[in-house]
Structures are given as C-alpha cells and as structure tokens.
Image 1 (tube, rainbow, N blue to C red):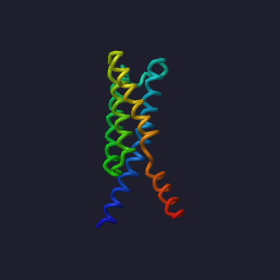
Image 2: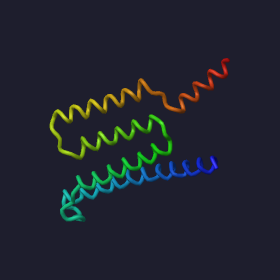
Image 3: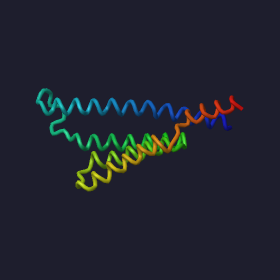
Length: 135
C-alpha cells in the first residue's frame, strides 16, 4: 500500500514538472504573440490583454506549486509557493510604492531564509551519510 502511494506521489510530481515546462512555453508564446501584435506584424488577438494572460498563467503556476507542495511536504517547496504568490502580487496588480517595497522585502526574506536558514533535502542526506561514514 505504501509503495503504491509513493508511486502515485512520484507520478504526480513528475506530471507537475512537465506542467511547469508547459506553462513556461505558454508564457513565451504569449509574449511572442503580444510582441507581434504591438509591432503590427501579425494581429492575432485583436486587442491582446497580456496582463490577463500572465495573471492566468501565474494562477496556474501557483496551483502547480501547491500540488508539488502536497506531494513533497518540505519547506523548500513551501518557500517556492510563497515566492510565486508574492511575485504574482507584485507583477500583476498595480500597487503603490510602499507595497512594492514590502513585497521586495518579503522576497528578500524568503531568499535569505532559503539560503542561510534552510538546508535542501539532498544536501541533508549527503551530510548525514558523511557523518555515518565517519562514525
């Protein structure tokens, strides 16, 4: 039963990885279409709304990261979800200057937490194996 549950989690995790790549390709396609529309080279969408498109993709990306969080259950993924949520707020919504400052400070705190106060699970396993080898 536990092996089957791990297999399902692994399948979901790899599916989500592919979905992230798909979202990245959709972002590139949207930017290319918007640039073509701006230059008048290829009027594909009429009045293209890049903000709404990017907002939709950010929402999808946050959902994908939440699925990863449910599959992995670690702090590293939780910090990534928070980074995407704060970034979405800063990029999509038109906020005041002090809100941008608070958002940038929040991103800086999240990066500092990930860099200095948190050890990636693979690094932790390597350190644990080295200590076992020395004992």
